[in-house]
Length: 232
Image (cartoon, rainbow, N blue to C red; front, side, top):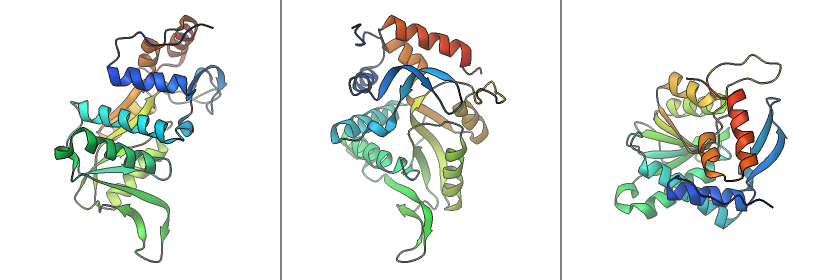
């Protein structure tokens, strides 16, 4: 069996995170038919971050991505869109506090409900109030951009301003699919352009290609990138 261990110039925290993805089979290789109809040589299953160890690894990777960024502006709240974004926002903020308590001690977190609560405290939002706050959104992926736009609208309705978005993986591929019109840009590119905010990913496809040492996997990802890759 050919090794898929790392031997790359990726930053150490990205190397560690990628190794976790491979060992836990959150990132797997083969032939996978996506919702778009495209056949992908790799598959990222964020639903498998389902243990304390793996969720902590993910939170650490988010925290390092955010903390080391030179392009994200200051923020007051980390927001996780329901439902998958809720644990992501909470673990990311907890790990940020561990990294730099003096910097993140007063940063809050919030999330939305799928359905507005009409009893108790009521409302759609839970956590720190967003009125007048700068908000960083944390989610797993941006596929078509529809869900993230909904989250941004909800934040703005609550009086907050989205200043950045951080996701786990950027597939770096064009919007569209088999039997559908394709656009040149990726969902992340379009979100950045339309909303005017920075969008970061812990890892992107180019970094997977650099970080994975199995030559067959690397070649197939390069071919996929060449066929479906987004263009600026």
